[in-house]
Amino acid sequence: MIEARLLYAGYDRQSVVKGISLRVAPGETVALLGPNGCGKTTLLKALCAIHPLQGGALQVDGRDLATLSAPERARRIAYVPQQHRLVFAYSVIDVVMMGRLAGRGLIARPTPADFAAVHAVLGQFGLHDLSTRSYAALSGGQRQQVLIARAVAQDAPYLLLDEPASSLDYGNQLRLLELLGQLRQSGRGVLFTTHHPDHAFVVASHVMLMQDGRFIAEGTPAQCMNREQLARLYALPPDRLDEAARAQRWAHQHG
Image (cartoon, rainbow, N blue to C red; front, side):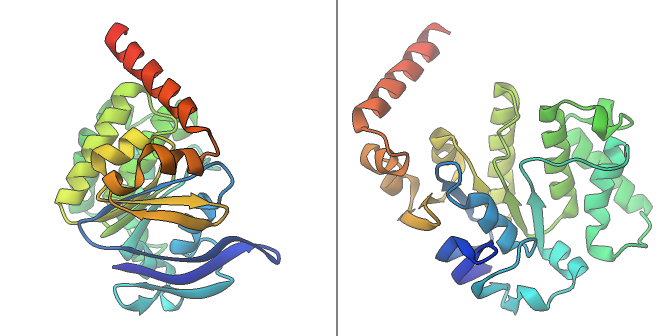
């Protein structure tokens, strides 16, 4: 289990994440929603030790995350950022292999079993045709798929995904939701940020609404994803949400 208690994180002396506590258990899919700039990305980076804490306690499976080496952290937590650029023109298969080897240190060499596992993940994501292509030459949506494939190949029990659907077309968004469901069924703990409340309804077992560095609501999707809570979260009058819902229904019926 990832367990955070009263976390503070930010930049210089300013806290962006302000006293947050949360748990991500095996077999649980947690959705984190909130407006731009509320601290979601900083929180995810703090949870995997990319961004330093200003205060609080953070453990994974009962161990203090700060005491673990980088390979030990990689064996426990995989992270998918919103945006990512590689300095060198690695191929797609090389990028996914990096995830597979992340928990073994810098000089690890892939085994036949590693190649088999990576090819299986490429097949799962429909990326075989791109496997020899340069990662740098891919579209934003294709890069996002490769990064998610890399995290899955890492085979860590916990996955943190920062807006994984942001660059994906509609079909690949649906495939992503199917994948998140499969990860949950396989016993992995998943925390993902999203600007799509419907995605949280489809796959999340738990939802957290974040505003100005704090959680303003937590619970099941049915408990949190109501008209009043979403209006408060995004600082909108409730009737604006009603208009958006009607427009979505119309588009669905006439699309």
